[in-house]
Length: 253
Image 1 (spheres, rainbow, N blue to C red):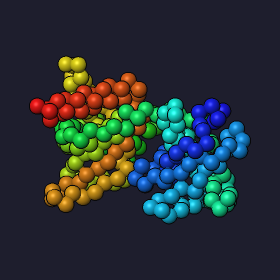
Image 2: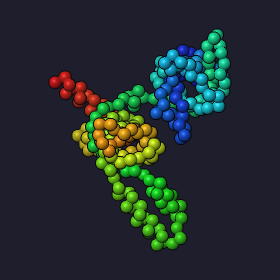
Image 3: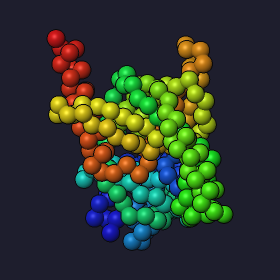
């Protein structure tokens, strides 16, 4: 029941969903508030505001809601049923379409750093070959061998880059290679934790990029990690906080 987690008056961050059904982090979130409960999965929320301007949520569209509750942060997706005025306040009637998921605040802590990495761009050609191999879609063994050899060449192509911003959910990195929004990359991240070398291979989606004005031929990419297993995320978060503590100690000294 929503009422077991949420309270009237709880602050809400509202974010549109991207084409993959995930919160669109390249878009500024809107601030809203829980007005009341209508049904077991239906609530009224205040029309979001941005810089004092009312934002009308589109009926039939899906959004991500992040609730700030006294039990922590919870998020879920919703669909807008209608908009109406109540006591001169515009409210949106929304149906929660997913289970509420508790979020860890520390997951979103971002560490500004310079960390050398290698990453692999997963091209459309590579995706096609992987699919053919998975489905065993070949005329004969010779064709299979040719595609496998081509795949091996693609898999060996890694690019050096520098991470400048790292969190448990994503990163920013600089590279001289040109990619597009929604391209998929695999990041090879090496770091020391508890005196032990660890290596994570992290799949990530490019969600935005900018050409760097102060560095000719370089681009800054923002990526969101996808399908990261919990133990890898926890190891990454632990490393980030260890680095943050180390930087604080250095500043004090």
